[in-house]
Amino acid sequence: MQDIKIISVVGARPNFMKIAPFIRAINNHNLNRSEAIRLTTDDGRRTTDDRRRMTDDGRQMTDDSRQTTDDSPPSSVISPPSLKHLLVHTGQHYDVRMSESFFTSLGIPDPDINLEVGSGSHAEQVGNTMIAFEKVLKEHKPDWVVVVGDVNATLACSVTAKKEGIRVCHIEAGLRSGDLSMPEEINRLVTDRLSDLLLTPDEISSENLRKEGVPEEKIRFVGNIMIDTLEANRSQASILDLEQIIHANAIEEFGTISPHPVQNSTLKIPDGSNSDSINPEKVFNAENTYESRFKNIIPSDKEYIAMTLHRPSNVDKLEVLEPLVDFLLQEVSKEFTLVWTVHPRTRKQLITFGLWDKLVRNENMVLLEPLGYHEMLRLTMGARLMMTDSGGLQEECCVLGIPCLTMRWNTERPVTLMEHGGASILVGNDIGLIRKAYHNAILQETKPSRPLLWDGHTAERCLEEILKAT
Image 1: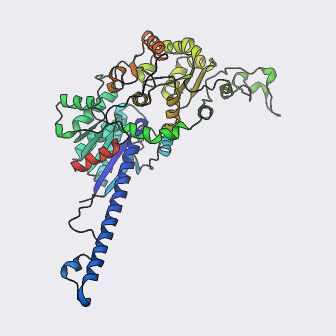
Image 2 (image 1 turned 180 degrees about the horizontal axis):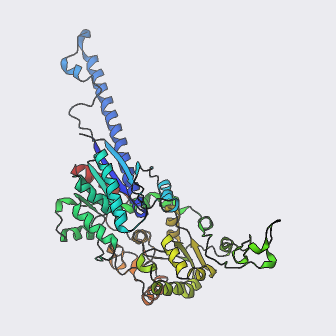
Image 3 (image 1 turned 90 degrees about the vertical axis):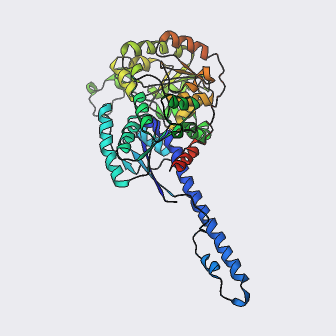
């Protein structure tokens, strides 16, 4: 069979956890192919040797036996195709904490091509990605473009590929929130409409596609590829030390004030320094750093609440973000340590709205930089409760059995909800709903739930379906 060339695309952090197992499946396929050819060739050589020994009195071998002396596999054996793979990173997220650390920890090879699109408006990201990706397609002429998830890179590259007459496979197809105010929902709808092969994570997603009129032959239920990554890494994550994670990732820059201002009388001014140039509100000695406070509040498993927050609907309006911060400070932090991994967008808004200093002053609040995959998984595994607007964390909490307050009014992952046997409950950003769900959740014991085919082998099925469709 002719070799198959595949280009897979990533653009932002949610993609990385999904592409890692797919690349691993491609590598395993090629390794298995090489081994199968080697074994077949060895068998062919042994057959030739046997026939040679059977010839009488050194007579010349028959024409048939001569034909088997070739090192190639017998013509009756069809070897699987070799897969030529290129990884394209659009550069939507490409920095150490939001991108590079994930490539390293998940064993993703360096991108073959980085489009370096960078940040910008949705239109700028999509447009710039299409312009740059078109050049890649014209140069490399792949058989398939594989896109994952619902980021801007997914939309841009699927549109560009179809305009070039190249087949598109969408991993994680069929997810629907029904909310067209979400850019991700638009990306999902357009990508699924254009894709030649739609690989769904659950049966609800498959049914969504059928309702939209997608032909049955394009839909393949393969399971959740995110869980492949979880299962491949949970043992490694489980042995990480929570205290080390907190100390290594504590936010060191926290606005214009210190939680424990250093008095002028305690300052040690180096020789030759001008004391007037030193602001005591910004000076920290070894006993007054924010990080040093953690020595007294490092929580044990199930004694802390974990939190992430990044969606514009939750962080871009003062009237939404301020009541949430007040709830966290006045209620949650009085019962538990709150460990909050702060997204850059959220941090910017907290500072803009004058809420950052409130959080810093609270001694039961741990504010962390965005974590690598293993560190975040370890934090999730030990949490009493997760508060998040992340779809990926919804899925992980479902499998891990961690109660999850999903701070959204809708979800494209209903299979993770408690009403479907999962661990998540939708609370939006209404403090009344959040408060009620919070008090209920901390008293509940949620058992792990594993939807059908969330078994750690989805990437293998994805690749199998691509090969069948080629």
